[in-house]
Length: 274
Ligand SMILES: Nc1ncnc2c1ncn2[C@@H]1O[C@H](COP(=O)(O)OP(=O)(O)OP(=O)(O)O)[C@@H](O)[C@H]1O
Image 1 (tube, helix red, strand yellow):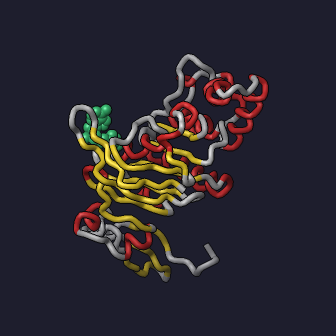
Image 2: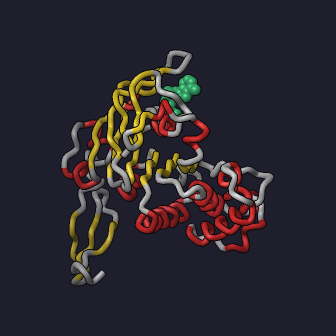
Image 3: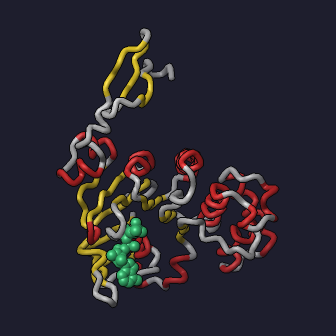
């Protein structure tokens, strides 16, 4: 479990990005931080691997206060996937994936064999191993980024808007892949997004944030949808606009679901027949 206890972060210029934040993130689950630009999501995420150090408060991983762990050591056991994949442009795909294991002292042959396995895991053809990042599509680059994040077999995977820069179809694909991966690998995932639909799709625990990383509401997607805690939350999840108020319309003997805008959202089937 990851636990934030009264964590605050004020940057040297006086900006308070995180103001007294407390939260438990259960192991083997996906927690999603969601909120508008500048609310402190990335700062929260980066405190987990000490890319940013808290100004006050305590952050523990499985009961261990991370301020006592050397940052480089900590980072080598936590996977980190960022927007635009963050790949090293002058290194081949296989070397990008193997970067951190190599830094940890894993022999090259072994690190490369593992990198190829990880390419299978994230759905990348092994023939791409010799390419450079610029020779891949945006979606493929993100898959390499995920493979690299998994390369040290971390218990914790931090993902900062990893699918923000790809088109909606590729994005939907990557989201489904992440759900599949999570069923298989069972990591503790911390995911940052500003997209509430992505948050509801991927999150076991969804944390809706306002400026200063103040928690507007936290809970399962079901809990939040069933009972938005405030007008802010209702507006953020689109409940106020009726966007999520689905209704049933009968068309040619079939039951079609339409959303608040009258757009078709899906078809109703008997449970188990879909
Ligand atoms: N190094 C820094 N120095 C000063 N202020 C910073 C620094 N990093 C972030 N901030 C400020 O802290 C606040 C939170 O930033 P953060 O990047 O955590 O937000 P975010 O929710 O991830 O935003 P986005 O969705 O735009 O990435 C913002 O006001 C930002 O300008």
